[in-house]
Length: 417
Picture 1 (tube, rainbow, N blue to C red):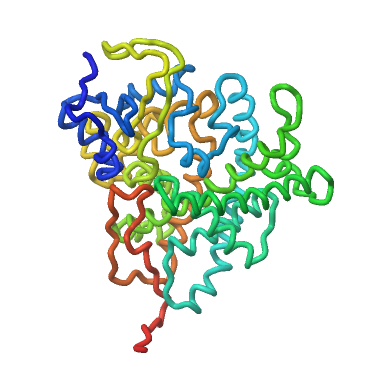
Picture 2: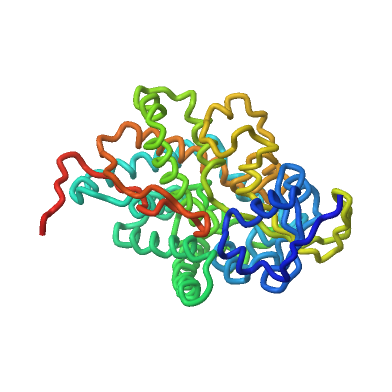
């Protein structure tokens, strides 16, 4: 089957208008899982589904270089990061990140997160009413830095949380807001660079095995220390994604509110369904819309020829909602993960493939464990959920509930002044 082309000359406006739904809505209309179009004048093949995910992530058919807008890459990954590398360089650098993902290390991260959550609860009670999306970013910033070996004082937590949040919020934007986020990132890089330099000159002594110690001392495939610039980028690539889990935690809160039966079960102490619930949150709610790649060589797929240099967008959100993969994909149902076979190409909120062998995010297990712990904490809190707008728009990238999810402390009374 050849890949059909859209009839319009360029889909930039449609992509910006439809966001997460752009690729799937057109695939549904055409009765296909792939189509050709242009975005920003550049020819692109848009794809969805498990086989497309396998094609995209298995082997070395695609490079991430030049596959996303430069300002998006600059905010989320930056030049020289693990996600921009290919082949042996990527595998070697990826091993550094995977060394941080031991069971003991993840348990320690979750313990820090829980302690930090509780330490903030007193302040939230004083506020009386909080926006969870704003506050959980501070919790995650403090958690990430402490786990990485960089304890922060409270004023700095607020500053770093704001900077990390701008990197995430503005990655899908264009114009002044994006430029300002890039400007603020320079300050974050300066801070991270000073921390790395401190380890290397002996004035900073992080715990052995921490992310900071591992990155500062890491030697690349050529046996040399990472450059200070590369080490700075990779340190931020540990911290920022942990802060980005805030969106999943907020969406978990939405799911608990809209499906109260699950909240009651978790409040009673049930744990067996925490994993299926967390995975369904990751599947059902929007996170990354798509991932881009450029073909490194020519190959055939689905009856069509892909030449070297072909730009491809893999629809992550659409693959998670593909009716050919899951029954009733628009229904929130954690039960669907009771007998899931762990297929790495059918659940792709943060990318597809085998994590040790591809560009799949090495921190997915961190995401799942933090969602699970947050789900427990949200299910047992005595904060209430006032009436608010919990809807979200698929044309907003990245998406978040319109209210940010408001929580209200017991006894709170709105001031009449």
